[in-house]
Image (cartoon, rainbow, N blue to C red; front, side):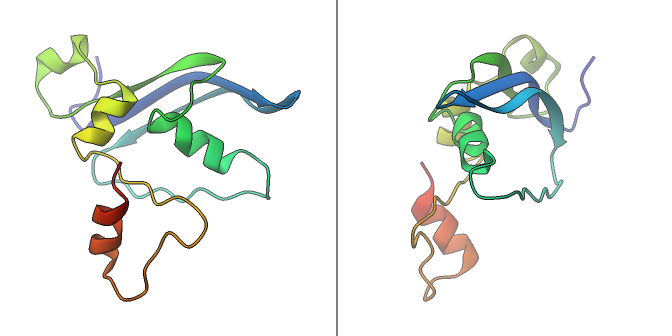
Length: 114
């Protein structure tokens, strides 16, 4: 039984790029209201993981499930990454000058929403 506050469930994610394993069996959950910090060296897979979470890329193995609300019925019908992004559950500002310093944080996220 999942937590009523569960927003994202990522299980056993594996991803490789150019004959290099970025992550193997990566599993984590994010509850509503949690703030996560993702850091790592250049080329360690941060952007690749975020692309995977929002549905821009697919994992070699594993599953990403998004949950839109606290309804019990949602357990049987989790959202796919692109559906979650379309509903505004996840906003992702890509690299290379994605942030406009004249806008607020909220305005920048809304501008970059996929």
